[in-house]
Length: 256
Image 1 (cartoon, one colour):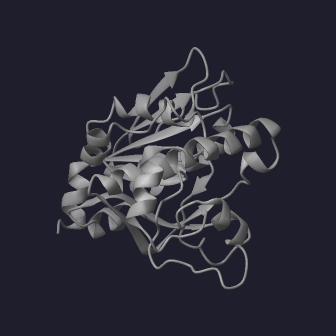
Image 2 (cartoon, one colour):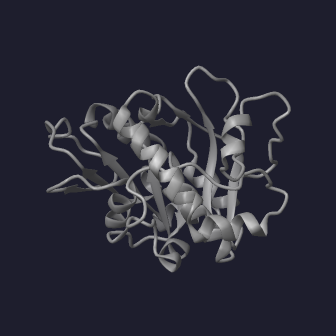
C-alpha cells in the first residue's frame, strides 16, 4: 500500500464540480479542498452550467483550476463525462457543490482502496445529523416506501453510492464509459453507474471512519421540475438492463 507521502507526490486526483449559478456555495468548497487536499489534486475542473457573476476572479489556489463554460445547460452525467475528458490522473472525484470537508479525506480514502475498488466514498452527514446516512439498498418502489420505517434492513455495505461524493478509479470509469448521459439527464445516473461498475467486476468501497458534510437540501423536494426529473429517472432506471441484471444477481434484495 503506498504511503501518504508517495500518494501526495503523485497528485492522483482530478475533481469535477458543476455550478448551476452556485459559485457562492462552491467558493468555500474550493477553499476547503485547498486547505486539506491541495497536494493531492492534479486539477479541479469547474463547469459553469449557467451564466453567473465571476466570484472567483482574482482567487488563487494550490491546484490548477480549469473552467468550462457551457453554451447550453447539460445534465449531471454529461457535465461530469465532459470533465473526465480532462482527467489525466488515476482518480476522478465527482463532487457536489454543497459538500463540506472538516478534515483530510481523500488521502486516507485512497490509501484504503483495494485493487478492485472502482468507486470510493466516505460516510455522508446530512444537515442537522450527527450520524451518517445509512447505506443504500437497491432502489425499488418498496424500498423507497420502507427505508425510513422501523425494522428496515440496513445493509452492512451499500448496493450503490449517491452522486454527492463519488471517487472513481479513472480506469474503471473509462472502462464502463462513464455516466449514461443519454438515458439520464439528472437523478438515477448514480445508481446506474454503480450497477454497471459492479456488473463489470469492480467493487464499491466505503471509508467507514471518514466523514464529509452535505449542507443543502435536495432540490427535488422543493422544485416541480426537479421532482419531474426524479420521477422520470426512476422509471427509466426500473426499465433498464443494468438495474435488472444487478437485481437478479442479488436475490436477497426482493420487493417490487
